[in-house]
Image (cartoon, rainbow, N blue to C red; front, side, top):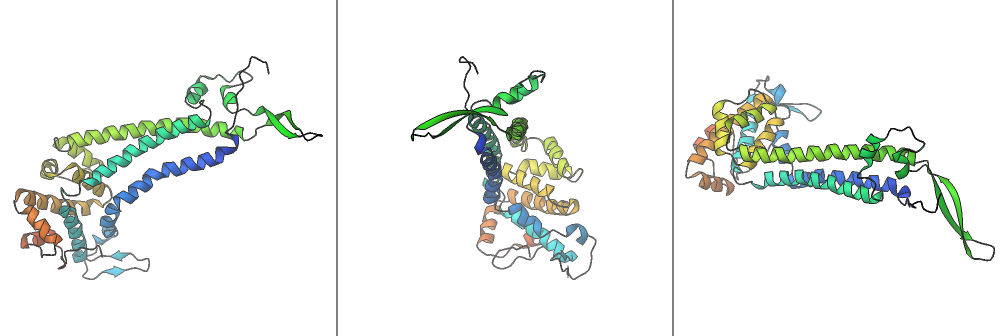
Length: 321
């Protein structure tokens, strides 16, 4: 080592396992926040239709319960559960605006989290993480020392302090073999590229969400394209137009995720009832009043009963059974 050489202190070595564990927790945090804020609404609505794909071919009058806690539903029970989902969706139409806001917030949190992890990792490695991937790609690996050795040295100078014969603390120099840096250099090089991929995906996700927010209520062609990703050829033109005209962004996004988590034919039956009901209710000046009456326990109107094909208890609460 020459006197003019810059001394670099590698204080991160012993903390690598703990930092990686902390980062794993931080990457799980947005998912946990979403599950807490969302409250399992999609899961609760779809769980009652768990056996629908088989139940569609079962036309008996009685349910069949299996030892594994799965139930094969009768046709009337299947229609009733579809009606409950329709009723739950329509009851919250244009009221549950916060669902989409929470979803977009968590998508933004994904991007903020990965950017924070990049900054933190760079600080942890002494400011040498930002250009690690670029330097790695430019390295020809023909020299005696590559770029990774400057960040993750395998052999380095160590200082030891111990008491001398007279009780004075003495400083000793030695060469230390940092064997774990053989693994650390590969871990953090991979993380550099992985963070880059996550940043790109998170930015594209937010751009896509911005596009859906702008076009969901303006373009039937756009809605037809988006819902074809979930179930190609499922929705007709009138249904798509009803979505474009009557649905807020929160309702639109909620319906899209319902489509992605349901059997195709079950979703078609569900969607027709939702679209027919929302079109009728939104055109009627009494729609808000009828929703309030349902919330306070009044019985559903005959038109709603015919539409939903569902038994509504007197207390106004529907359960998935």
